[in-house]
Structures are given as C-alpha cells and as structure tokens.
Image (cartoon, rainbow, N blue to C red; front, side, top):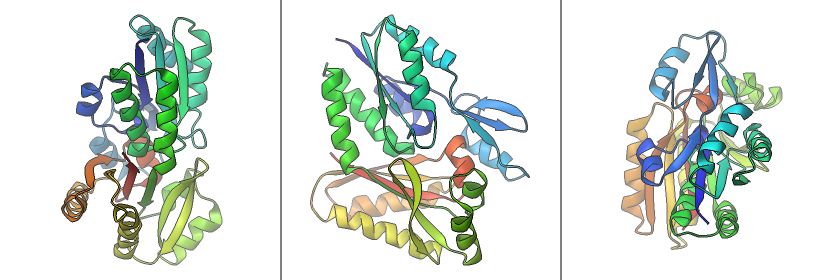
Length: 280
C-alpha cells in the first residue's frame, strides 16, 4: 500500500522539509482587511506581521473548505492508496472534521485523519515522522501507532508578549487575559486536552524563557534522544541563539527552528517564542 502524508499549514514545516519528505499541505486562511489569504501560499509570515502592526482589528482565521480538501484527496488518490492527514488540534479548529467529511466523499483513497491535539512544529513533528515511515512502506495502522507514541512524549511550551490577541480571538477567557494584562505577566502556555491553557504565570519575559529552559532540561538530562524545535514570531535571532545553546549543551538533542505563521500568529502576536520536543 502506498501512503501519502498530508498536513495543514499550521504545522509550519519549512518548505524545504516538506519537499524533502514529500509532505502535502492544505492551507488555512487568514482574513486581513476583509480579504482572505491562504497562509503559506498567498501570504507569508514576514508580510503578515508587518501588516498586522497597523491593524486596529484582529485578523480573522478560517479552516480550509471541504471542497479544497476533497480536491486534494482526489489528486492524491491518483498515486496513493491511503493518506495520513495530520491536523492541528480539533479543540481549536474544525480542520480535522473537514478532512473527515471530505474523506467520506472521496472513496478512491483511504483517509486516516489524525488529531495532533496541538499545533505548529509540534504537529509538524508528527507529519515528518509519518512521512519517514510512509517512505519505508509502513502500513497506515503502524504509522498511527507511532504517532500515538510521539504524541505521548511531545511537549510544547510557549510565551506570548501580549495576551490581547489570545483574548480577542476567544482562546483565553476574560479573567485570564485581565490578570496577565494588569500584572504584566508573561504566561507560559501549553496544550491540555487539545486546548490552550496557562501553564505558569511569570512576571518577566526573561524569567518565563528561563522556566521553559528548565522544563526542557528536565527532559534532556534523562539522556534520551530528543528532537526539539524553537518556534518564534519575528524573533529569528533569539531563536537561533536558543537552538545553539541547546545543541551545544546536550549531545542527545537535535534542534531546528520554525515559526508562528499568520493563522497562529493572529492569536499569539509578534514576539512569541516557544519550544517543543519529543523522544525519538
């Protein structure tokens, strides 16, 4: 059985990696000034953040249409018997359900829609792992088993400079947002049961990032082989420095850099930094 791997744009897998591992992608949409753009296709992160600085209203986001996903599945059915579709958490988007619905329409290919229960490169790790296994002709069922293992060890923590966007977008409740704003808290956030939740509230950016380092250190000092990724929104120099620190400190860690693109960046805003990892 020949298996394709599909993900959505919020995995933010750098294009060279998607091309290398033959990972297909459907884009989510960001609506800027009443105009809809497909992220990673019509608009890239740099342009988005530049435009967002001048916006009075928060951009809106939307999932891929079922028609677009159906068309992608039909294209894949010409060359593949099955597809593993790794999507961002169903707790924050209807993208997974859209793929399930499209898969019921397209009968020529077996669709395995997988809920990463997370987003960004933490989701991307799962798509990359699926692609490596698919290249080895691993069965879809075995790939799903491995994705469950990755999910079980996958950790992701991120810090935002400003809670305004998360609150406006409905990703944090009013009380949480007001607390962060009034106390100038830099919260560390993570995913719990597919939802974004505060992990700890810390007073300064520096202390928040140091706390994330501590959490990573706890995992890295076990000696297990870890794949990590620093994720940023317009803080590439800081992300590179963090990556170099981690790799120089630990022989058992390999690290890459990704970014918060337009859809996730709408909610996190500029200046966010995150760290995700899993056991190889």
